[in-house]
Length: 388
Image (cartoon, rainbow, N blue to C red):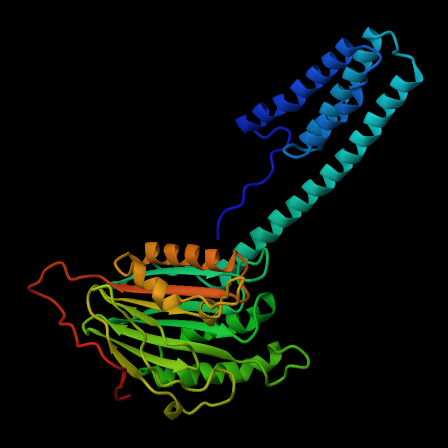
């Protein structure tokens, strides 16, 4: 998510604010001079109210009030030079500028207060994101990782999508998941599953046993988080991935989650056929209900995990985002650049309006630098099933 730049207020040492301040000051001088030059038949002084109105666009209430005072001074100078300073028209115009400036200053103060509140909310949201979903390391053994999170709700930093990674001995385990629902209401279930994975990933030898452990945790605590009227209807789809350092393979167990994209160094995109098991949170705790699918994953390959917010994203005509087709354009990019291109392309496809949270995670196995000690590629094909 891109950074947001706040408005410039009085006292902020941003040089551009002083440049912008010249605009209303020059307007006051020009309008006052023109009003004096045109004489009593053409009255231009009411246009002075434009100056404080324009100032409120880039400055705080105090600077706006100062420009308003200069506008009233310009009206008074014009009246003095034309000999009508004490006339009813000039007095009414000065009072009108004062009233309009006061209203603008009040609105400006309310806006700045709201901006400060939003800044605090964003700060809390960013802190919550760091606590709930820890930043992933850029490297896990021979793997390079990159991730992107896009929340569907405005001003939210995190929602119902999740990912986590753990180093277990000579292998890496990664999880990506999608809570039923989106945005902040799904945050509790996401935090529950993330906490369970971080502990269970180091305690269970096989992915089916890990899936069963996560299911037990979800079954135990999920009822406490379910909103009223949705008892038994909340669940989480998840994909569990295990990549050993010494094998050119990736093992995956799908708990109702979409299959990842496998990008090869030869600009190929493979979408494997997985054996989906039941989602987490539905009460199925038997490891036999979860299958391990094995795919080749050699040096130079990249695995892209994602949530269904990507493949279900639509443009203004209702056309789904062609994820595999677009990702094929950047198969030779490193994980960070790959996800950067996909993020920009996805937002361009949807016009910046996502219907669901989006999580993307790219895992790249670095090429072996010394060909004398390398891992052989396995012929790519349909997913197979390994022993547990």
